Length: 105
Image (cartoon, rainbow, N blue to C red; front, top):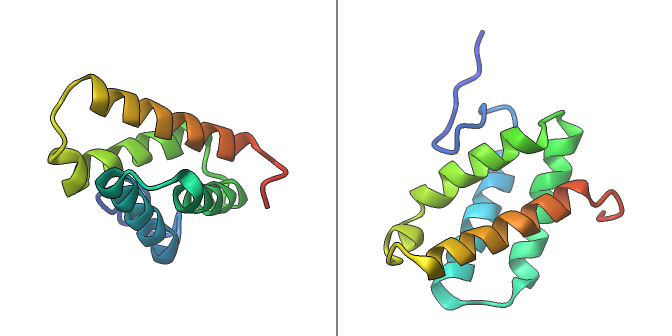
């Protein structure tokens, strides 16, 4: 039996649907409302903790994260350019920090 992949590219069994939904919602809110980092950081922390516990490597998580990012309507509605690139770079940096922060949890 093979695992199916969702639009993020992660196997369906790799991360829980709840975790993926929490991350999507936090990203969408962060982009749409320029909300503070708190909710996004919590969602990234939960996602990274689950990824580590399930043996998902950081690079696999980042590839899937970027796929999810570009699939978000809020990202597609943001004009391509420096602002969008900076926002992605900032969120990817947050993701990397959360992934390697063993004390976060």
